[in-house]
Amino acid sequence: MLKRLPRPATLLVTSLLPASLALAACGSDDSTLEGFDAVTVSGQSGSAPEIDWKGTLEAGKAQTRVIAEGDGVELEKGDVAQINFTVANGFTHKVNYTTYPDDEGNDYNVGSLVKVGADAEPQSVADILTQAVEIEPGTKVGARVAVTVGSDTLLEDYLGNGTVQQAMASMDIGNEDGLLIVVDVTGVAEPAGAPGKAPAWAPKIVEKDGVPASLDFKGAPAPSGKLQVATLVKGTGPVVKKGQKILASYLGQIPKGKKPFDESFSEGRALEAVVGGPNASVVKGWSQGLVGLPVGSRVLLQIPPKLGYGNKAQGEDIPANSTLYFVVDILDVADVEPAPEPEPEPTGSADPGDGASPSGTPAE
Image (cartoon, one colour):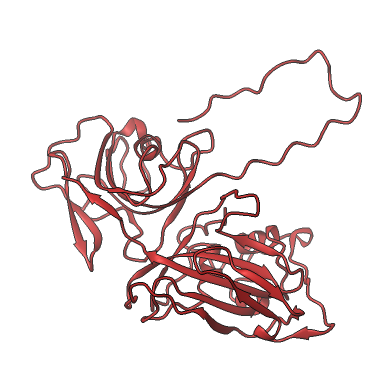
């Protein structure tokens, strides 16, 4: 999972990583080639790209090439495109990160979103990588676009950002490596499926520019104190399982809130989160409300305090004991990569009589 930048995005952080964690240049001065002279990208858009290296990719300025035009709907300025992408290193010739399944068929990464024709501030490391590939108005769904760029050029505004540097180091990307980034436009980020009827308890969704902008609680009953789930659009994709991670657009508001306390629709960004299980990264109401629903769904959640933030206030916008309402579009789902196997204990260091099991109760 690519790391999310702290909100608000602290891209001006000046503290550097310790020297032991700083990025080391992986590039080489021997027989380097510029741009697409160093690499050929082929394969069907919508599946993992086939990458054929001709030599070492020079770390230089960005060069863009349209690999496939696509034959789907034409994107307009302001549309939010859903994408899959692959990042490969022009020195090691290895894939550093991909949202496609690996060679064994394991799918551990969800896609991402890009707002067409917008100069948005990156909210995650994925944004930094994918925004190097500009998706212009007129691009069609099904298009494949690639860019070659030096990591020094790509990251020149983030050299003091520890979160970014740690993420790049974890992907084995040095500060002078040539990178290949391939983006496939897979669709428009919106619910896709059969519409359902909103229940009586549901506030009205107010839209702006075709996406949720706020909730109108006029005429809606008081919160019931229970988790309520309304499937406003039932998707046709794979069903979300407990412990998986999802890609979601969302809006959250409390009944007395004059505006949402958080939302992603207007910015064309999304949340990558684990729902259910011991590694859940969202409130329990999300986990209990979203597990079991298919990708493509739009869901309205009423989350009581005990499944939200309880008696703890969250800043000025969410008082203690607040009922939370969320509009959630489930856009993608993937498994969570298993944790590495622990290193075996040195011979003679373990107590053979110690048969205690790990402690802790899995979260729901």
